[in-house]
Length: 441
Image 1: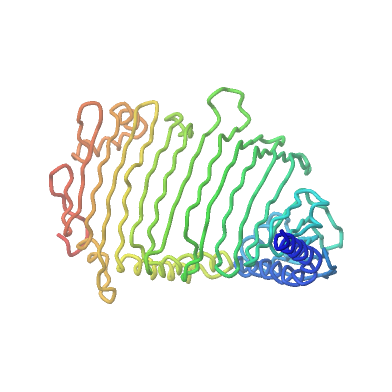
Image 2: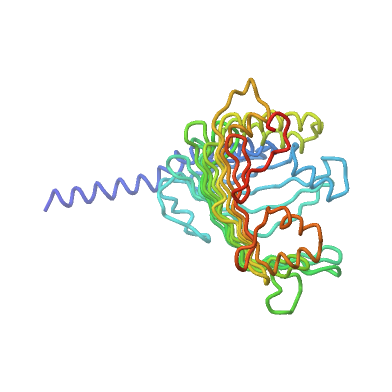
């Protein structure tokens, strides 16, 4: 029995040392980890400047404050336009006040909401405020509860109770909101999962409400300046203030997955939307299933950077030149696009489109659009309900030309088209048709 008692005493001593001694040692590691996560987030956005405004380190817990300012980019430009100012200094700074309970077992955190004994470098709670250019501090709703893992991974849970905000003649309402974000500065991976019960704007001009918003994903950086991984978004409805049943848009479900295979990107996107308004055609349901295979990662990254430079004030001519150069690279490197489903369900019937496009790698030094047409292998199947075609013809008589030319051929209750391009030859419904491109006649 003695060895058992001796082992038990040793265990108690070990636990006591962990609880009493580790907070002071681990506190510095936790502080460093939180700083790394904040500065990593700033580097990722390339629009933020993070400044530490003090850190009071205790043995069991610490207090810190950080200041986040926009140094540039599209978000700053949007805020300046909204505020009606050209002076960046007039854009409020975000102040983050953090209380950090540290220790391998953060016992001190049990004295507050969302405390935990989960082993790690620390457990924190953060609140937010805005500091205006004249020094006024405005408290913001919501709290973030964070835990810092032993490897530096940080998990942050943003909790916001239902509330409202009034500005001039408009009032913004929001339902209970929760967002869980996991960041890892060493790998650059970001995971997120969140929900918003409702989000509404009520003004004299209009009332808009979005209900039951959900989103999730896990993204990892690529060498080309964009992220890859799964992401999902959905909402139950968007209501524009109508009391008529069925007038609300939705529900919507959007899913995407993407991954890198070497320097090539594969992506898969699905969309399902109900009750989308289509002017004189009525409400429609939209279903889409689209795949991209073997896209050149560097070209996609360069196009993304060109768009960001354009938003940052680059000249439009430079933007077009960059996009055109990298669009050519995207094509000459080879790519496949598959529209497995694109359906528009209207009161007049279902319009259906399916497409396949494959382009093998071609010599970039001899790029010409004719070479693309000669190399591509593409096909498209389109089906248009007779009732919808009749309505489109009444709205625009020129739509009948597609039937007169044989591009759309009636088959039962629908007009259909089967088209393909192979080795520069266009075939529509079994009949070859000339392509109006020099060098292909």
